[in-house]
Length: 275
View 1: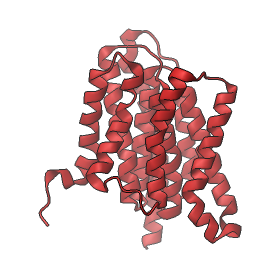
View 2: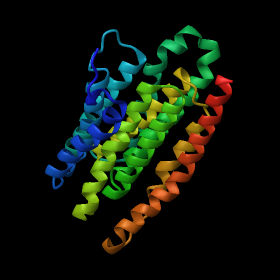
View 3: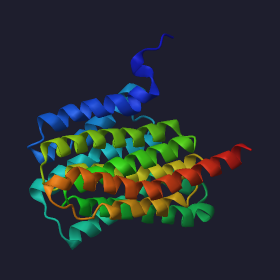
View 4: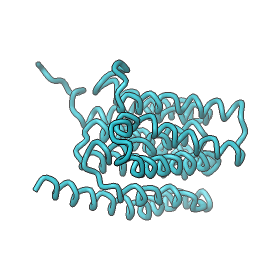
């Protein structure tokens, strides 16, 4: 079968999601709730070019895809019809945990005794990531963009090194699309809230992709608490606009430390399993 440029993994997981998200974020940069949807546009383009949208049979990976597609809808609803409160945060903690349980239910049902504690840990991680990204929805758009970009690339590279090409591609598409959103925010020099459409989509992707890579690939579980630290760094307060680029690069540099360590652990773990 003849291959085309669009069949190349780098195009599917990086280039195409970036430029499609860039177009959406650029056109709607003044409408933050729409600009935040650039993340899901990048993810959708990546899936369309790689596996396509098919949900039958409903495998764990397809459940993950479905949840990610629903996440921005929740973000829009929360923006226009809800209010951010402690109760809202608790609800999304629960949704993150339940989403993880649904994705990993086939594994848990086959070995309830052996997988109960691991799955409980993955649910805790998922709840945390959804909750912390939800809190970023009211932080700076630059903070949300940096967190989504860094965590996306970190999760994607970790899953890819751990021998899950599909999950890795999903994570990288998040990183690429978030980078496009962040680029537009930096160029326009707008200081707005990150918005729930952006952060909830990023949060659910980060929450579900990495535990799935731990279960179905060769990613060591220890990377979960390491990656979980990264979004906390994004709450660093940005200073005046004249130092926006400097502050953004500083955040990237600090976030790269735990991301780099997670990748290092995954490389070692995957290498040991191959040997």
